[in-house]
Image (cartoon, rainbow, N blue to C red; front, side):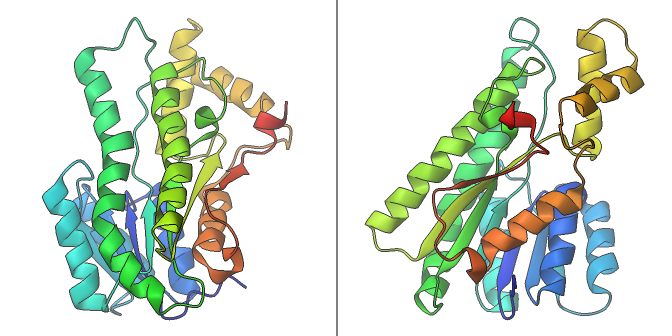
Length: 267
């Protein structure tokens, strides 16, 4: 199950959190992984922790808003690993400000990371993914990190919701375009609930500020109560879903959104 033997994956924003855990599980499943991130030292530490002295994990500096960085990271996959089978557009940011409070510069930065980053990664990886997809029984794969905030409204950050809604529909549209062109590239999205990561902690701080208490523990409890399953998510919960979508076990899935949210959107 979820076998990635011989596959090569590039994961953006993989120095920590969901991206780092995805890299770890992909290596366990047999893949070689390029960790891309702007956090250079943290990224190198993560690569060492996962791969040790082996060549199974490579760190490459990657600012997802920069076209040259993407080209260099994809080039590293080609020259050092022989190709690219899997792209995980994981890098993202959370603003935590309302419509009236956010500045135009903050909005532009949010769009640059959450939308432009996904567009650039997809656009520039397509030639490599298409080439490897021709030789694979079920093609290559792109997995985009969206959010439950890309499916339902967000009280905390409507602008974040706007960007993740864009990722949700871009995923479906890209899947249809590549199918129309005969590319063997599956494109799917993941929609996490509240996950216990640095970004998840940012949502607690924002919620506490927005309800006027500045009590982060209370905000965390409120978030917990929105998850019927009785707990918040972990990076492993989401990483397992990403590995599944990257594997041939998801061979008949494209243009789909995998919701892993502890029941949040079932209400």
